[in-house]
Image 1: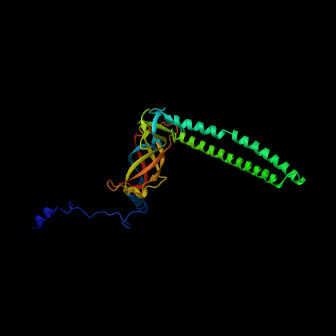
Image 2: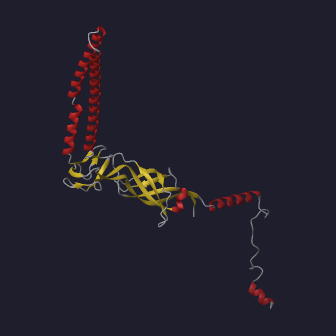
Image 3: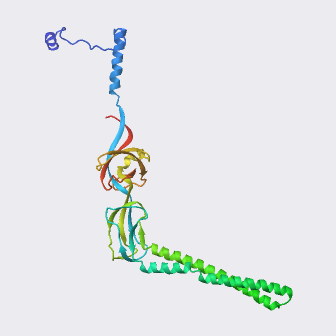
Amino acid sequence: MRSLLRGAMGSDKTRPGPTRRYGAGCGLSERQKAATLASGVFLAALSVPAAHALAIEFDCIVKPSIVVSLGSPVAGILAEVPVVRGQRIDKGEIVARLEDSVQAAVVESQKLRAEDETALLAQRARLALAEAQMSRAEELLDRGTVSQQAYDEALAELEVNRAEIARLEMGRQLAETELHQAEAALALRHIESPMDALIVDRTLAPGELVSQDDHILRMAKLDPLHVEVFVPTQYFDALTPGLKVAITLRQPATTIESEVSVVDRVFDASSDTLRIRMDLENPDWLIPAGQRCTVSLDLGTSPDG
């Protein structure tokens, strides 16, 4: 029986010996211990996860900063639209004009009234005469050669002429005010651009009736541009205005550094996202609006693996 067990287990020469452990006090020299400890520290350093920047890319879209549907403050017949689609216009430039012949005639009439000084000049002459008569009446009254009644009549005539001068001057001021009102009514029929913009579309043509609910043109402001992206709400805490981003455009094919300018604080519950916005300077209008892009957000650090 012992022979069978010895055969199954093998001889003492083939039986595995005890496992060798390399710990402190295991018979190693000081140099061997130091080498073993250094190698262990090195391997442990390799096994620690390294921290790296967490940059995530999202799809975005480039939009005009402002889009305006330009209408008219008054109703009327559209007489002229001197701009076309795709045209670049400056702030204050006339982009449409309603039929204004009646208003222009009213302006000319009020201008003539405001500039008419004939009645005022005549009344000033009467006032000068009344002042001279009053001076003579005072001298004659002192000499006793004129009655008190004649003196009082001269004084009353002087006061009446002075009051007439004041009335005519007030009438002239009213005429100037009415002129400004007529000019303002005429200006309402000349539609000006509220900003430097690009004409996106023309919806009405000359001869059509324009109501206050209609819009004649659509225009877009292209400097600056807005870059908008929807980000999952889980990144909300890492999103702050001023966060540096990299925007990769298709046209022109380039990457531009920018920063977050707006972080929405109202989430979209249906998609569990929020919207952020970056402003993109575009002084020469070289970057077209309406194109898709990619934005890379640096959202801090994350452990590797």
